[in-house]
Image (cartoon, rainbow, N blue to C red; front, side, top):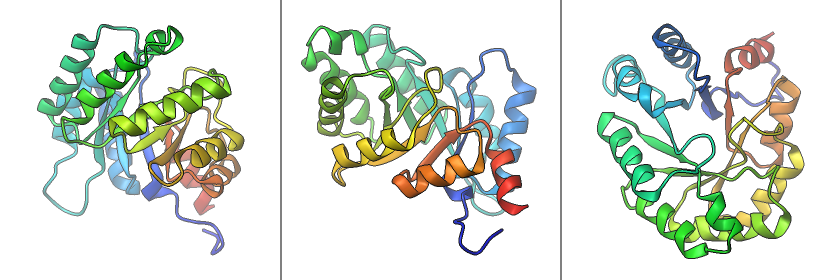
Length: 222
């Protein structure tokens, strides 16, 4: 690993969000995260219970945080169901939650609904990242959603779900500027190369959400 390149391993949330993958892939994802010392493993709420068994909180060495996505990938479910999913994920052992907000309410100008939904999940007292889809919102809507999210208590602004356009350096810079130090930035979606990952970190990302964590580490250590 080059001396002038940062170690990416403590920044990577190793994601497995492909709905067509099963328990074998979950096991592999968790084993890879433990081997490389990644920050976290990000899975659908359906897999939290299984992943918790594979990421013991006590044992030999530190274990990656277990992250559950909530309302994924579109956020278009009733608040009570999203709240129930968040509560169930935490009960199953999740350490953090990556939450898709109510974009429909945002489009309708119902900022109270967006705030109330996020605030109720933040009150569950676990770190929450809000999935912003920065590549699809116009500048005014993005700035508004950032303010709502920070007011609600989120700790990270996550650029996207990975189901939209790849994250860009400009998006990370924008989120960093909008956050003004009140929340950290997680870059996510289409991080396909080492140089892309390093550029995102330089731009201000303190977490990288990617399913390509192993390939990034292999490239970094080459």
